[in-house]
Length: 301
Ligand SMILES: [Zn+2]
Image (cartoon, rainbow, N blue to C red; front, side, top):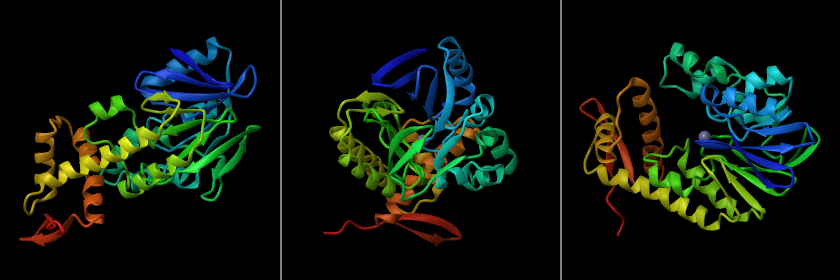
C-alpha cells in the first residue's frame, strides 16, 4: 500500500478506491481520519501499521458511511483508542437499531448482517457549534458540511490540509458515477458552496485525490449533481410510479440491477434525486388509481 506525504505530519494511504488520511502526532502515534472498508481494507491497514511501527492513537471520522467507519469499532478495540465524530453521525452507528432507522429499506436481519460491524461507541462527540477541536493533543478545524450525510464534516489538520471526505467527488468519479449519493441533496449543494470559504494548502478527497485548490472542482461538482437531477427529471414525462422511474433510469444510465442488494442501493440513490426534485418544486407526487405517482411541474415562463 502506498503512503503519500501531503504536508508536515499529514499523510494519505492509497486504498485503491479511496484515500485515507492520517495525522502523525509523533514518531509512533497517528490519528486516522476515517477507517476504510472492513472487508477490503482491514488487513491491509493492520499490516501497514505493523510494518511501519505505527500505533493508532485516535480515530476522527468525517461521517459514518460503511467505507469510512468500517473498521472504527475494530481499531478502537484493538488499539484502545478513542473515536470522535459528530453527534449526528454517532447516533447512526450507536446500535443495530439505530442503523436500522438509517437503512430503512432493509429488513432488520439484513441491516444487522450487512452493517452490524459499523456499530461503534463514540468517545468524543463533536457538537454542531464546534469549529475547532483538540483530539489526542492535536488541533483540528471542523467545517460542518451536512448533506452527503446528515452530520458530515470536513477536517483540517494542524498542517492546514483539509480532508474533504465525501463532500466533493473527483473528476474521475464524475466520469464513472451514475447516481452519486447524497442523503439530502439540497443540503449537500449548500454545503459544497461553504467549501469555497476554505483556504487550505491542500485538499484530500476520499474518492479520490489531492488538490492544491478546489474552487473549480466545487463549481463542477455542483453542476454535476444538478445535472444528474435534470437528467432524471427528463425521464419523468408523465405520471410515473417509483418502480417505473427506477426501471427507466436504470435503462438510460445502463445500471445493471442483478441482486436485491444492488436494487436497494440504486433505489436509495434515486430517492435523493427524487426528493431534490420534490423539494425544488420540479415534480409533485400524487396518488392516482391507488398508486403514488411522480408528476413533472410545467416549467415557469
Ligand atoms: Zn459517504
